[in-house]
Image (cartoon, rainbow, N blue to C red; front, side, top):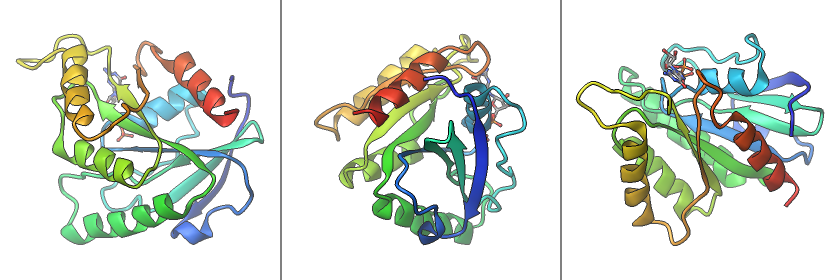
Length: 200
Ligand code: GDP
């Protein structure tokens, strides 16, 4: 399940411009600041590969990375930019929804959830939308190393609260993995998980 090689393939402005071969792919999705670039870097162990621009409203592209010449890791635009203009938010949904609903080679969405904050409505909305549309997801909780959050709950408590809310909408609870890009926690588990889903 090791990542030996990663090549940037292309950025697509529309779902129909994505690569047309039949290789399986995983899309990485999450709120702005969730730790997506850090996670991609930690998976790939190369600092230069996560090419996402961080300016709100500017990352409206689907970025395909080819891993080990056999499967794609897809970096999707983040959501929930606090300062993004309303127009940019709307753009995001039609564009990204188009991708989800039409991408036959999509094995699963890795939905990143920040475990250092309480459950966020926008994350729950996203998870529920994907669930309603039968798109397989894996919850990847980030920042699980953050043990003491001022006044807040611990990551494991936030995760439990989140799972409880998800259970109300899912008959079968999606798989989930706890990670930290700081300690490397969950990295091997996530790589193994993806290799199992690919070979399923
Ligand atoms: P992105 O906007 O989703 O790409 O998020 P980044 O990867 O840029 O991370 C956002 C912030 O969270 C940065 O300040 C990171 O240093 C921090 N961060 C990301 N991952 C972790 C993690 O696993 N643990 C901790 N403690 N901080 C993290």
